[in-house]
Every structure is written in structure tokens, then in C-alpha cells.
Image 1 (cartoon, rainbow over the protein chains, first blue to last red):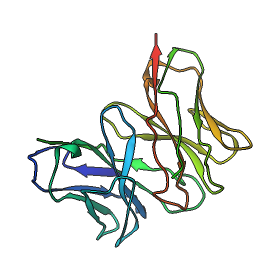
Image 2: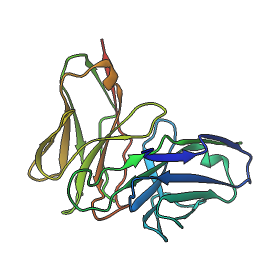
Image 3: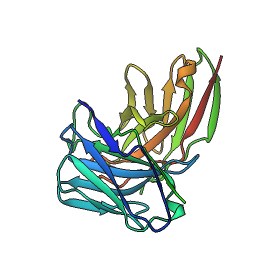
Image 4: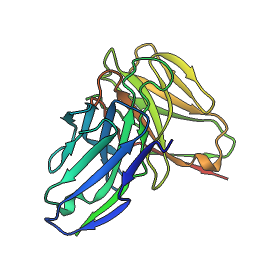
Length: 117
Length: 111
């Protein structure tokens, strides 16, 4: 049981380049999230998904797109990277159960450190 | 979105009890209160959650007053390994994506 994994762990891009970050979870969770964390700051929600084929905007969605074609995967895309997108990106997932052990607990991946030059 | 306010930093010594308070004046009826711990270069890790009164697990206690406008995370007998950033998160439950992490509280435990 690997939990939440993220690919890649590190990446350096030039301004204007594109890339996709992959998040995978093996806990059969319905909800998945993408956050970014800038140095010394808290996490800010970019996009989230409540199920396969559905996505929604979070607090800071501009410049990012997402897709959830399979329940276990949540992809975050940067179409034209900008230096302001230099950050650490975290993926998380959780169950949609409304009660019981583990309810409301988000499980986080190890993060992807992205630098845009 | 439910906004939270926490102290930026706190210092403590090994063996002491630490209480970190989070203010959430605009908490909604269905919102839960969840606390996470984050070490450098790692993703946050769930500590405890509650809706009202007191909740206790093997690592912490969570105190929530009747008006639910604040909550206090209590860490008993902290050790050096408890040095981390602690986040209070209000919301989620059936409303995915409707909560935000604040800037957290950096707890430094000294020997």
C-alpha cells in the first residue's frame, strides 16, 4: 500500500514550457486535491476532484488545468510555466465517507518541487 | 471559505504541554475542525479532528468550546521531534474544497 505518490519529485522548467504532474493513490479514495506551498506559507488549494471525470477550481486555479480520467489518478498541468509558479506542489486524497475512522482525513503525497526559470 | 487564524510561532521545552489555538469565527454548521502536522520537505500529516467538545487520540487532544469559534490543539509532554508546523483546517466533510489551510504555527521544542 503506497498511499499517495507523486511524479516527478523535482523539475526545472524554463518560462513558457509546459509539464504535467502526476498524482496516484491506491486507497480507492473519491476525493483528490492539488495544493501549492510557497516558502514559509501555508498550502493553497489549486483544483480538486470529488470523483472520476469531475474537477473543480480551488483558491488559486489560474495557470493550471487538471484531469481525473481514472479514479486513482489526478493530473495537474501547466500549459505555459511562469516564474510565479515556482513552488512545492502537494497532492492529497481522502474518502468521501461521512463518518467512521479516517473520515475527513486527507492523505498527502511527498510533494513535487518545481522551479521555473 | 472558512478562514483561520493561528499564532505564527511558539517555543516550548521538552516535557512540557503545548496548546495551540486556532480562531475560526465564520465556521459553518457542518464544518469539522482538523489539525495537521508538517515537517520540512514533507507533506502534512493528519493529527486529529473534531466537531465539538473534546476529542483525544494517542498523540493529541482537541478542545472545542460550545460556540465553535475557536479550537485548541493540546500536545502533552512534547519532545524535540514535535518541532514542526501545525495547521488548523476548518471545513471539508461533505463540502470538499471549501476549506483553506492558514499559514500555520511553527512550534519549536528546545532541549
